[in-house]
Image (cartoon, rainbow, N blue to C red):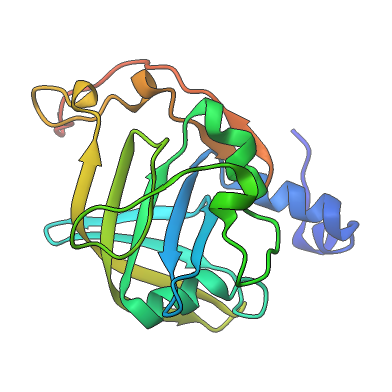
Amino acid sequence: MQHFSIGTIAAWDRFYRGNFMNSLSGFKSASLIGTIDQDKHLNLAIFSNIVHLGADPALIGFINRPLAAAPHTIENIHSTGEYTINLITANMVRAAHQTSAKYEKSVSEFDAVGLTPVFEEGIIAPFVAESPVKYALKYEQTIPIERNGTFLVIGSVQHVYVDEQLIETDGFLSLADADIITSLGLDGYYKTSFLERLPYAKAK
């Protein structure tokens, strides 16, 4: 096994270093966050750092890049207090990835990449029609991470829309059956397959 010190890593070409470090934390979920601004401009952006923070209350967090690099999603969330998270299937990957391009605020990524916005009653933020698992959140809190200028954005789940065939009798969601993908690094996408579910672990 090869050893790399942080000094060695820091001296690498920035793109090589970026690929290496972004892959180091392993496979991650990949989802599309849908937002809308006060002028009704729709925004859609892919995020691979969404994390479950708790079930009661139901909180979900994601890391937003420094504001100058990715302003539209977090601006819209702060402005309206609502957003959606939409899981990505294998046949959505190319369109989902393209949402990472830096479009002007007035440009809808839905239109630019060919995905379909859909609205549910009482929810102002757009969902992705093609996603089989999606949920709406109410903005709760932003926690700045001063060390690198990023933000942890926390929302509470308000509404969930899911293909009922994916829900097992105990509430477990069989996401692999819906061809939900996972990601690695900034641009690697993978299909998943079920291995097993294990019982609650107890000390022996």
